Amino acid sequence: MKILKNYVGQFHPIVWVLLIGTVLSRGSAFMTLPFLSIYLSRHMDLSPIIIGITVGMSPLMATVGGFIGGHLSDRFGRKPVMLFALFTVACVYYGFTVATSPGWFILLNALNGLSNSFFEPTAQALMADLTEKEKRMKVYSLRYTAMNIGASVGPLIGAYLANTSAKLSFAITGTIYLLYGMVLVFFLNKLVLHKVENLKKGASFGDAFRIVKRDKALRYLIMGIILVNMGYVQIDSNLPQILEGTVENGVVIFSMLITINAIMVVLLQMPISHIAEKFRLMQVMVVGAVFMAAGLVGFSFVNGWVTAIAAMVLLTVGEILIFPSNSMMIDQLAPEHLRGTYFGAAQFRKIGNFLGPIIGGFLLSHFQGQIMFLTIALLTLGSIIFFSIGNKSFIKASEQSAERAV
Image (cartoon, rainbow, N blue to C red):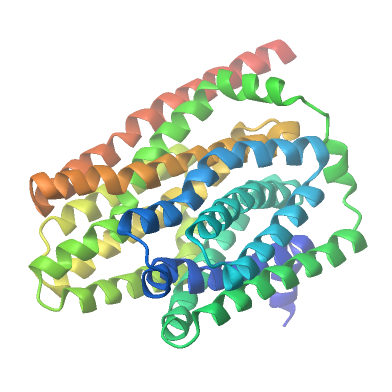
């Protein structure tokens, strides 16, 4: 009991609220959004193109909105931005229950992506604000674990509700976000965050944009993680098609792979992150990119469930190494008063989530699965070049700052 108390006590109470909220909100979101296209095809007479536009509006808006939301949190405080985002998302899901036209679904899902892109970088920035520097890697790892717990449970409930009452799933998700916002209001009002309030320096949007634009290390880091995301997103976009068409019981194998991925992240994220903390962040990210590329190469040779599992294990280890390290790297690059802006700028990595399925789909339709995976694996390995250049830029900038300080 004392060990548990000490473990919980090492982080601020609001950090734990955000972590628990991440499990519940991600779980409820994964209970609904993966099945949105099914709902639209079953209940509305829409073409696949319109359904694709509707579903794609959320990540598209998130790509743009992250920088804006992160900057607003630096300028006006974390609290108003986070609460506005949570209550807006709640309204979005309640809106899904009564929407009757394609236009409303497109508008609501665009608002959903925008609001979430406001919340995510602001929540990460607040976690960093409230956590000692040496413990932040652990916080980012816990956050990533929390996301995967929600992502592993949510679809199971969503699959059931999709066949019974899809509107009920929208209402449940809206209620969870509403309660999350109310709990956060209580804790943010109860616990005075002097440290966070003192960080605000009122940088204008133009000033913040120019600072980020001049930061070569950040720019190269984002370019590298875009390539990583292009590889990672193949698991959701093109792998199911390949397995279904080339391997017996491909759909069953794919479901098993998703479960293995989630379980591995939940069980191994903290132990692997603990080992990774002994090395430099750039080394960890490079090794992560190699593992992810190796997993993609493995998928190009899949001929049954054994090779499929082996490939997924490699890719998952890469995922565990690279994504929390990426958050920590952003944290190290960001000036104190622009932490939200930097985490918001990092949302541009979702360009990889947008381009990945398109490039992978093009390669798959014109060549074959093996060529597609090998090509995407090479692109993923290309991230190492950007990570290395970004690291050199960061070291050079740090040395120049140290010289000016002297």
